Picture 1 (cartoon, rainbow over the protein chains, first blue to last red):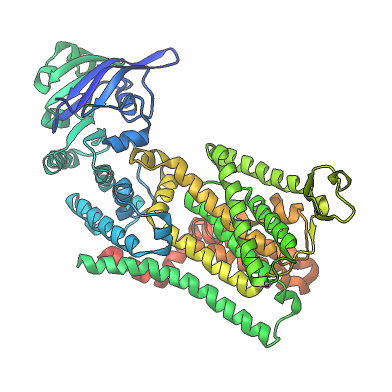
Picture 2: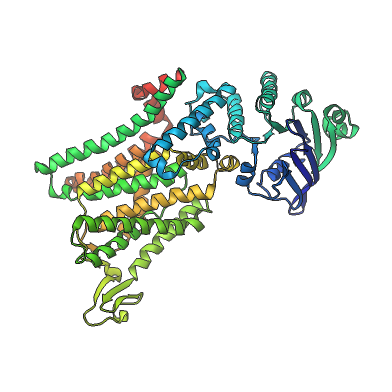
Length: 252
Length: 360
């Protein structure tokens, strides 16, 4: 059974049909790519999946559970985590605290316990510290754990955003242009990292990307969007050789 | 190695908060010694409780402005709620509960609870707004609270309480009834239970709650909303809940300051200067000049800017001029890029430990 099953998803902004009749089906532990020209509606699809927008039509099911039109916070609890095209970190918090915010819903103690620093506070905070440090280690950020997130170099900020998303222990990870602004070297490292995340966390990943080298290098299946509609869908090699895709997006 | 680092980190935040408590305690002890040896003018001595009030107000507003990152201009309104609800209670209970300490403690709880309830009631609709809009609406709510108190008449006679929003006569009381809240004349005859010691204890409690809240799971959630609301939502932070929490806790603390204020004076009236926008903006000035988000800064700024006008009284007309200059200098020192650069270069020894840790 598919982990993410989307049927006939659509939304209009005024007279503009931003996304129309969008279907996608992603299997567990698959690396899936969503590509298309600028303004095709890729990020809108992400926003529909994560509850930022409510779809006009269609159904979204995650692991058999209907999450259509749910609020962002409930989508997060259901198991979808995302990163953003323009990095959105908690800039003034430390790197460690950024990840700990991601762990927020996995560890609990009451406000009173926190203010009075009761034993449960110490115990849970210690667990959170350890778990967060482990994640940071995976992403090679443990050296910078106590730096302000805003002071990290660009590439590390991207990694931290992925670490924070993974801290929520999602079933599905959405990456919105993870390679944006990276040079070929960094993109290469990113590809290795995405592969590693998939294997290490048994993660299912859906990513938006413009970098064709990255897409053809790691994605097993692709969906191409154009003007809000699915242009082509299937195995990466088939899609990239589809004449329609070449005309609309890749160029001759 | 990792463990060591973690312990260092723990002790770093603990050390920082210990310094803050330390400054408060030392200041208190110095003032107490000066007072008991009679080395201080009675005017300055009378300023001790207001000093505590302003510190509590500044630190609590910093929770909304600095930690939650929303601009609120209605802080004095919550202080007003705390002041009037507690003064009302104290006046009614003056002859029933004769133990001053107990009566004040109950009044304090009532003032805090009333302000917190108002904080939640106002917060629910208002916190949907952001930035300037939120500032304007909170400003309006602060004024509404103050003006409502000014038209409130409450009397008590053998039949119980009487309410009116017109005048004393329309209370329709028996001849033996007493007016408790008398519209613009406010409440007179509140027992003067506030002392410097009580004020200081409340300051410490405020610091304790805000500092520990910031270092807890809830505090992180609140700060994540400040830094990036959309990202906070995407990792499953309940925005409404945490905004409301910060707002209500801040209002409750302002309520406590109001209780101190009400029990420091024999006559309690609501004017622009004590519960109006003038006061709200004054508190905001403490927060901004002390450094938004810096608890210690708010405390120090509140003390300096409350004491300064009194210390400079001898200079008569030049007093406000110097006050204004101090405001500008503090502003530059805290916020100007060049000043920050200079501070980092020349005062770096204060942050030496922090840097060492970062390099490791």
